[in-house]
Image (cartoon, rainbow, N blue to C red; front, side, top):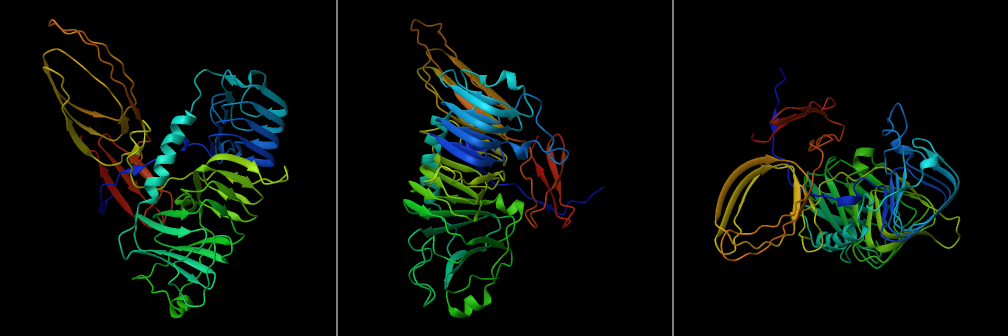
Length: 457
């Protein structure tokens, strides 16, 4: 019997709501030519594609088995679709009743072409609700900071180093006008986000990297975004000596790409470059104008259009974000914001006139609810439950007294995968997971790291 040497409770994480399974997710229009989106794409407005492919990373057997035939919402379009030549490799094109479908020369490899598009009155995503949450979350995450003395940005004559000591999450703040603070290494100049020579992230291999970028106009540069796990024992001081000791990293491995999150919280315009931009691009208020290169992660933006020449394009590779972002309060704008991987107990009482209720629950689920209730009855209830579910309910009640009132209560809960972690926090290799009734057993065959997550049942 294997002995598990380390046990811990995993922290609570915010999520990307409805965009978590989509490689490209836009509120408005998308136009791309001679390009592809490796994962799923959800376009809230109109989509115009030419020589365009979608879903190649989702259906690539034997390494990646295809979704069940004719079931996957690989491309979702909220408006009109014009598509000339290309492939939907993994599933269906899903549209609403209001959109027009003008498609020629497009093949469907994992669905019936004659049954496309799949028309529905209820798209698999709610674009307006999703972007209400995203715009709120962008501002909330911009206000988050790592503990003092655990992160620093150093500009070494154009080679920028983001150094973080935290094993779980490292949060950095930079500006498009000046990547490093003015009081930095003497002689390094005032490099902009576009003009730096390289950017190396030095932090533990399994830590989430949240980079908040201030600026309304963002120009990507043609430099490398690199990763290193050679974490110093203490933060370096901005100096020439530190620059001589810091070493540039290498291209991130896949597990590390999926932990990098760029929050362009004020951006209105983003221009891509010819390089490979590592990590998720989160800019819910911005239109991305594509010039070339590729983006290695989710792209969550207002619009996605070519920069000038219609042939300009930027590929999007399906390295979906799976880091742990701080939980933020956007309850006024959304009904689903958090993924819980902890064990928690809560108790609440809501009453109007003579109604009393109490409940205690232990859960591994995510919920944010908005409800209005009025009752005129006498009732007392107490219950204990363990759940991980998604539910929506609506009820109307009439009391047995002389006063009759009606109440409507609705809640939305999103249920997430049972596994709390996919990659090893020590070496970022994929974990082997055993699923038991009241616990999860995790083991990394690469570095022999192992631990138990108990659910308390």
